Image 1 (cartoon, rainbow, N blue to C red):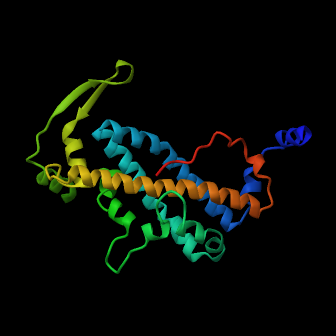
Image 2 (cartoon, rainbow, N blue to C red; image 1 turned 120 degrees about the vertical axis):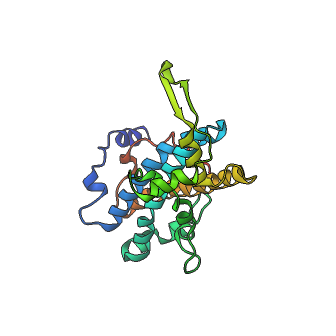
Image 3 (cartoon, rainbow, N blue to C red; image 1 turned 60 degrees about the horizontal axis):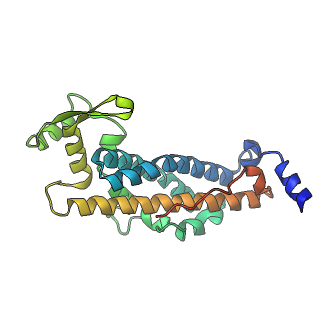
Amino acid sequence: MASQDSSRAQSPSLTIGELFPDGDLVGQWVFSLTSLTEDLNIGTQPAKQAQESGDLRGILFWHRHMVTRLYEAGRLVDAAQTIPEVRAFAGQLLHDPPGGANLIDAYTQPAPGVQSTVQRLYKDLRNITVHYSKVGEPELRETLRNYAYLPAQFTIEGGVGGTPDPQFRWVQAIRSMEIFGDIHQPDFLAQMRADGETTGQIAASWIMVTALALALHTHRLGLDADRLGDTSAWVPPSP
């Protein structure tokens, strides 16, 4: 038994070429999946901390980051439905993943003209996440006009290591209303929490799918999964 453990420990690490063979469409899909999960993992913990602490600026930033990444993941869903090799490999994974969200349903429009869950989450984010509004265009003028009645406040707080942390409260007010609706409405906080929970469930499902897909992919290629590295400390994310 000791010699078997020793031989495993001495097994050479997998190379990218072994794990993602040239021209292998399933391998390309799994690589894209791991790229998505890298980005989601970076934002998951800070997003939870912002929610728990009531940090509005943090909530807005990480919600935008996560939803934008989830929107881009629609390409993975599309590939899993339109590329035969990928559909055979991944179709069931996306239909019934652990994590709390059916990923096919989350990206599928329930009826013509009706947005999918992810489309609804993303619809008001593109213009404030993918780019900043262009000076002189109607978009920026209309934004400032629509929210002209809000107070314009500026504060400087102590940041990490005593570095000044300027906060432009008008940006936070406008962004929160663009994303979650009118902050003066009684259901504002409830909507913010609901969207945060939905985003968290979809992200958790993608992360769980990645772990399963990677295991299936190495098995499919006849590779020794132990050569990927030590995963003994990994704990599944909670939705």
